Every structure is written in C-alpha cells, then in structure tokens.
Image 1: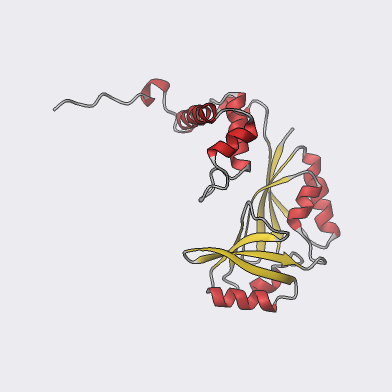
Image 2: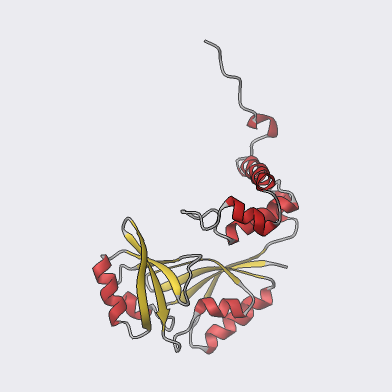
Length: 222
C-alpha cells in the first residue's frame, strides 16, 4: 500500500551544513524539474551576494550556477561533492518519490511517497548508516479508497496525482495541459473535463458543500 512519509533530516552531511553556518537565515526549496546533473534549489533569506559567497566557500559544493530568479529568491543548479550524502538519490534508490523538499534552520523537511512502509524503514536505515539521524514527523497510508472519500473517481484521483508529479500545479507550470494529456494518453479536452470534475468534487467535499449548493444562484434582474 502506498504511504507518505514526512521526514526531518539534519543538514549535516547533506551539503547544506556549511551554507547554514555561513548564512543562518538561509531557506531552501527544491525545484521539481531542472535539466542538469545537479539539484535545482531555490535559495532565499540573505542577499544573492551572500548566498553566492557561501556557495563558493562551501567545500561540499563542487559547482553551482544561477538559473533563474523570482523576486527575493534565486534558483541555483548545485552539484555537491560525491562524498556528500545525496538525500534525493537515496529516496530514489529506495523506490520513493520526493513530493516536496525544503530546508531552514539547518534541517531538511521532505515529503516522500513510497510503495510500502518497509521502504521508509530502509531509507531510515540508509541515512543512519551515513551518520544522519532522521525524524519521522508523519507517516500514513494512502488507502485505495481514499480518493472516493473525497468524491473522486479512480481516474480523477490518478489524473490529479499525475498532474502533481509532473508539475502541472507549480508556478510557473512545468508541463502544459497538452503535454500532460499526451503523457496520460487522453485528449486535451478529456483531460480538461476530468480536471474540472475533480476540482468540483474536491471543493464540494473539502468545503462540506452539498451538491445542490454548488449550483450558482440566478442573477437578479434589474
């Protein structure tokens, strides 16, 4: 059964320790898609000059380059030293998917999807073997019937999961609706309609609104 684990992982040993020591106010967020051999990380908090100085001085950082910027944060492509523990790669090796990852105050917070709870145990053991002690903040199973509890059909549920995995809901979007429809093997129109029905089901369920209440009231005449 698919499970979701939220893990808090100390930055020591993962390449971030030196950066947090140099600029304690640093915050970090993983970019879901980036075409490189390193990691795309949004860095913010200090100024760009302070961040780049810390990156240059960090022995765990082999290479870095600025990819993009967004107001007061900067997207860097960072390649860490091979001796550094690559948390993201460990997750992949254990058959997991990193749904989100952010770091502040010297620690990573990862949300990971795995096929079985045993995969979480394996990941935990792998980190411990590398002298990194993770904390399991939350662990829960994604029951097969969970989608129906939200009013979603199986196909709607699978479509929303695929949209999240491919970055459709990111800002800016990392995949177009056309690309996502091709990935799912359905037409653009079918995908659009399925997403609209899924949105309606989620809103109706989460806001506890009765189906008849979702019908827009008539517009009063002048």
